[in-house]
Length: 229
Image (cartoon, rainbow, N blue to C red):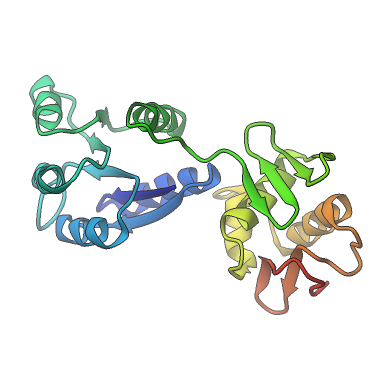
């Protein structure tokens, strides 16, 4: 499920994107109103998270253009919490309105509610080859029904690989995703985490079928055949 995040605050946009990717969403970002409309038209996202105060075109004008052409769910973001601003956004067709600052947990709850009301569903299970990642239970199932329990770090790593399957993910990017901003993850810790996860999910951990190492770069959830150790 694809979400367009529109905010000229790069740090906040990165945090929102980080939060959404952890939940299995595909994220597109735009930093001004015109870029937002171009991304909306080209990418056709399932949801738009739209800041009010934007360069070039403000959020209200962007919302008006989106509503003139489609029914994509839109959640407005603003530092303002005046009732008139909220009413204006809702009158223009916004599906919800969140005042900054807000918690990632609150944002995710609002997103799920908006998607349910619009008839869409947030990501649930993800599949690759004969593995199914159960997002709610944080576990993996094989095609025959065997359940593999994961630790929180193992789940984050595998989830990130599932969401980006077929793509080579640099080690530093994986570390930031799995351990979070400013935490204690490093390349040695990532290598050990990959080793432990392979012991749980790989038929032969010495010849990985799923998690492939790309020397000098990072890791990928590969083709389902034997890969790099």
